[in-house]
Image (cartoon, rainbow, N blue to C red; front, top):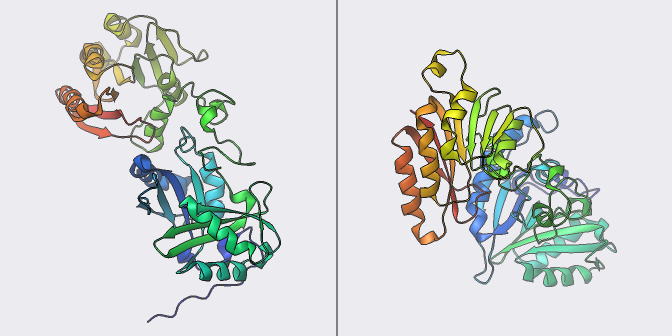
Length: 398
């Protein structure tokens, strides 16, 4: 058998990546079981953009995504592992993501660097690898949570001080069967408090209460006026939708304006249609028609018309989007009026909002059928930012 790599004695617990074999370095993100697949898909889909955007600072940045359901039948939480992700890179990148910290998607983040088969072995290795925690204030973050007491007891027997707040170091432990994955780091690596809210001094991450507007402001992360705006932002971030400067979009049922603002901020010229007021500041790329969508087709066509040949034929729109809070049939009754003025190759994005999940496939399938009468490549997506009762359809006009 190949020789096993030897762990190196650390000099500090602040930069833990340098102390351990690379094959054991990973980051685990805790979430609700119902979110685990969507969260894993999101993190996998943004990997290349993270690599490209952080090439100068972290030239070797990469990771492999793995879903892991709960290891305990009474636990309703699950994990997404990012294997091989540099811990310092994770600390810099994850808190800045505008999507992860909405609606308590992320409950906790665990920074792991070693493995052990038994509890006693793990405690021995923690104290050997990180002697600096002896006598220091330490908090244990465990998954499942019920293991925290036993881990902390083992550490206090070695002279470590237990602390819930004001701790100097964090010990991260995940138990699967009788095996443990663990890591030790300074307190600055603690991103979340376990309730989906940012912890300590990590900046720019909207908490659950921020996202609900109860305190703080989501605008610290993105100029989006409502949580719905993050659906469009997720589509753009994941590369599922491309918005080019100067493209003409109509946003049907647009109030309070989340999708309109996201599109306009990415350079699109948006005609935003809704009888209600928009809750967005004036923007040079936005025209608001305070009318019912069925009554605006000719006005939209006139606003978009110019001398190009395609527009002389009446095809004036590069995109149609709809996130209106109504059943799919009602949304289709508005959308179908705009088919004659949509260009070939135009983008169509619709959120299907279903009251009863038992009818999900039938109702979404019916709207898919309507779209296929004039579109190709119709995709049904359950975005991380969708609710359990929502699906997003993305299509291209043929």
